[in-house]
Length: 180
Image (cartoon, rainbow, N blue to C red; front, side):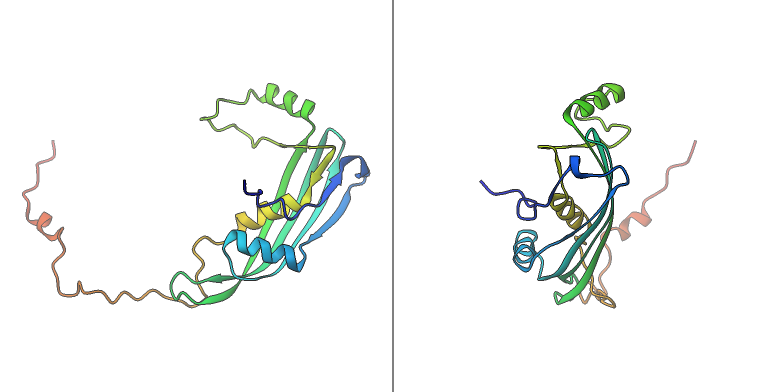
């Protein structure tokens, strides 16, 4: 069984430790963690991975806002050359205790699995903590460009179709139906 991608970067924050005024937390991945995340996500080296978060709320409901930023080497889909790319994702996530989450589900009448709820379902507070390492990894993954293109890279097609007639050219010779 393979570990979840976020298992490597775990930074739990106990919800009981969040003061009424809020809590600022920075998560920074170590060299080893960045190397393992690069392997798991199939990127080149990750130069840095930092999550900066503001936590507010109570033991029943925690609101996490902030940003996840990274410097990562990716391979250009046009030139196939590695290049430095940046990830910057805004974070806005709500966590709720299991009882609060059940009340939320009942209040919003969460639809069947194949339907989309009107509002994103909050994540659950597990073991009295929110894992900001997992949040960092999740938003890093969301921010990765699935088709990275090196700045200035252009796709120039040099195929053998030049001078050939398109297979759809014959359609222009078909008689048109009169509109009713």
